[in-house]
Image 1 (cartoon, rainbow, N blue to C red):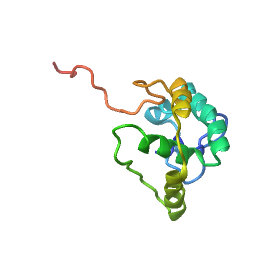
Image 2: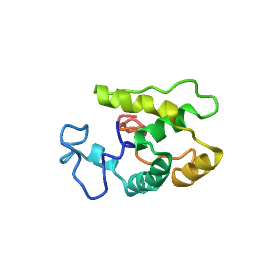
Image 3: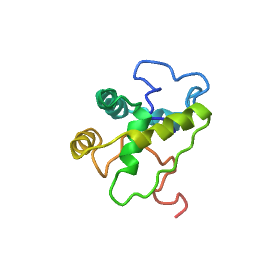
Image 4: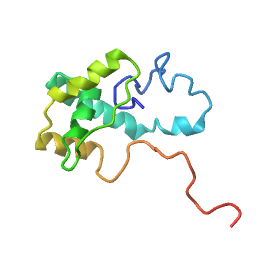
Length: 125
């Protein structure tokens, strides 16, 4: 959904034409922008700058270089996004990088709510 691309910033409006540009009063979408989401993005920026890559490339490189992962599913909407995604193939994620990322985004946790459904007991049971 582009959350780790860096286009969504703590005190800025979502870019025109982006998935969340018309977030309005949609409470489900607003939940995605919790404070810890911004903390993670802001914490990853120096690592991406050091590696001379985009945040999206760093996120994809991290995914692909996880033990047991054989592929990452990408969903570019434009040719520019595809080209940026492919740049992740040139990014190396070290064990130190993984530890720093794990400190920002705790393994087994989440940085933004993903499921929009309520998986609690059915209302008629």
